[in-house]
Amino acid sequence: MRILIANRGEIARRVIRTARALGHTTIAVYADPDATAPFVAEADVAFRLGPADLAASYLSPERLLTAIAETRADAVHPGYGFLSENAAFARAVVDAGCRWIGPRPEAIEMMGSKIEARRLAASAGVPIIPGFDESQDPSALAAAADRIGYPVLVKAAAGGGGKGIRIVHDPSEFAGALAEAATEAERSFGDGSMIVERFIQRPRHVEVQVLGDRHGSVAHLGTRECSVQRRYQKVLEEAPAPNLPDETRAGLHSVAVALASSIGYDSAGTVEFIVDDDSGEFFFLEMNTRLQVEHPVTEAVTGLDLVELMIRVADDEHLPLHQDDITFSGHAVEARVNAEDPANGFAPQIGEVTHLVVPDGVRWDSAVVAGSAITPHYDSMVAKLIVDGSDRATALRRLGRALDSLIVGGLVTNTGLHRWLVDQAPVIEGRVTTRFLDEVDLPAAPESGAALAARAWLDALSDAATTESVWAAAGAFSLTPHHRSTPVVVVDGTGERHEVSRADALAAPVPVASVSLSERSVAVNVAGHTRTFSVPSRTERWAPTGSGGHGSAGAVVAPFPGAVTEVAVSIGSEVAAGDPVVVIEAMKMLHTLTAAGPGTVEEVRVAVGDQVASNQVLVTFVAADEG
Image 1 (tube, rainbow, N blue to C red):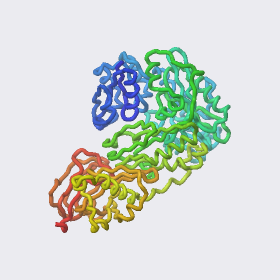
Image 2 (cartoon, one colour):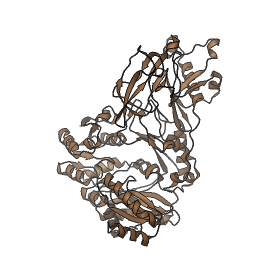
Image 3 (spheres, helix red, strand yellow):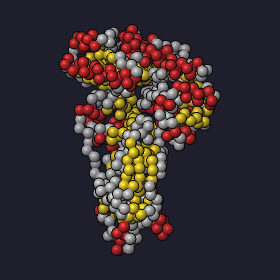
Image 4 (tube, helix red, strand yellow):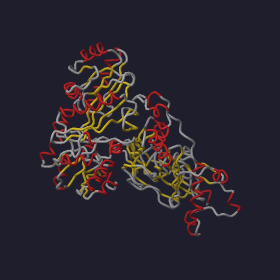
């Protein structure tokens, strides 16, 4: 079977892995920024969709249907996100003579509207949060809020991902919150319909994985806990959900299967619930008619391959197991590694993955390899780090150790937040609610790691010092007594220069690090964070930004993320203060970066078309007074 994956990044690689193991031919589709991405190289066939614009590539049913026809695909796996829950696209794929590796379009349609999903869930005997969705008249919704009792949740009837949601604590706030949420929902999903429902004070987000076939069988694969969230986006997930009374767990399993059976569900899907941590009551939230990002934790505790089962079911096979055949063993935890800065409001980050070291003994479902670029065009998820153990405490300890050994260099990620989370009492005790990250002070940034970077650099030079040529190529300090007193200079990702004495460097603990002598770059793990440093040569002068131009006489750095549109200098060029050096485009505006002082260009580290990160070094100089 020729399987086209209508997706990108991590999930495309995941589907390719299983499909190939089953002997199927895999077809990747890609937009231009992904032309060199790992998932494209790993597929048997690759089809170009077009430019970066989502509407013209991954979200274009027309382009995807063209890809299906031109690559002679027999089946389509949509992954998650994008068009995975678009019933019209699923129907078009089926009409084109292809298998849809997912639920039938009618099931997607039934669960696509939260209003219709609530009605169907209630009909199947699934508990529903007290709410109102029969009228879209603002006065009727306000009256419903009064009946339900404040606080209430106003949320979009369509879509997901935290869009179109407001918490309202007082009747005086209702009209404004409703208008804001409806406007946001209309812009995000093309549907401004709203639901008003009771706001649970201590909510946990618990879900049940279900699996059905096209012959009427449905089974559950246990629970997952996804309560560690920011802005309604999951951060840390685990299976099974901890601290659930047996009655609650059994009830969740039962109603999830009942709902899936009632709509003839015939693929992998997830029924999501809000569990009141005070009372143990649970209420239907929504059903995701696709594979979930967090499916690996279910695979870890069941030993099943959900993508394989989806493919087999789409090929009209019976489920190869019954409920009594499914066993659960141990505990698994997944950390979503995102290119974002928790200390800066979880702002997304872009840049190149310059260093990548993944510890042994973990599952690493990743969109990247060393050298991959994180661009501003798509979501910020870089990878998923999955660990398991015989019990929950063991799994959490293993996650902590894995985060202490992980290196993702070149850009800011949330790995340090994950390392902090593992040590928090509510996480350890399994008593996290969905508001946990909103109610605690996030950790301060750890020490810079400059001494660790200097130690790693010296250790790498020592290891490489088997021939003089290696030392010379690395621009290393000699081992003469005179140079033993020379400090090691490292420059961090903000452009700040750190001088570390050799004594202090060698006194630092042996770091978890990745060193590139040829690129003069060091990445070290500091409390789970990866800190990346450049090591300037002896002739290179570096200083922090802000000294008149966009950098110093020693370097020009990017003041913010953008794309290089012009490089005005080359190696050996003489520049004066204020001379144009590089032009970058950001937020649809051009910004000319200039030299801060006189000098000679030593290195040009970017070319036209490159995506650059904030504080990335673009051009370096030898200052004029150095001759």
